Image (cartoon, rainbow, N blue to C red; front, side, top):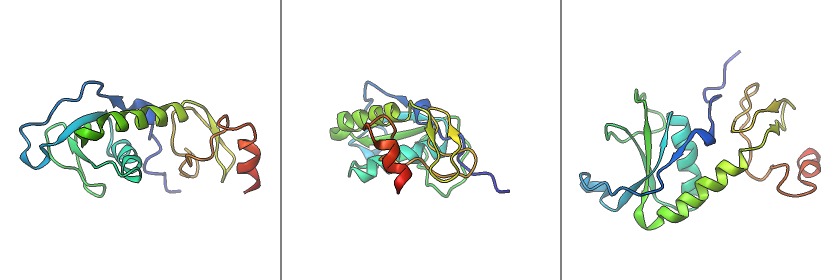
Length: 148
């Protein structure tokens, strides 16, 4: 069958840049700072989509400075997620919270396989872990997700 494209999506592999470095050489994104370094486009866009959902302006680019779009084909060892420098602290807190959430193993709601900690996507069926289904967030979280 088709392998899920982003089976190696691991939010805990994303490296947070604690000290925001201003990207002065880039005129178009003068007010942006580097938030995180990711090993894949999928990881970078996983983070970017969560930032976006909290209305934090961000974009992804390669180590070489080329802007990356989700559909594009890019060959880079590193993908940098840049955020509006005024939002850097809020964005860093969101990333840390995401990584803590994914630090526990989970059960896929679709195929019931056990997924290792760190993984955001089921290795078997490709279902993405939903942020609200964390076992451990709430005493009856497991029962709630099973009843859905």
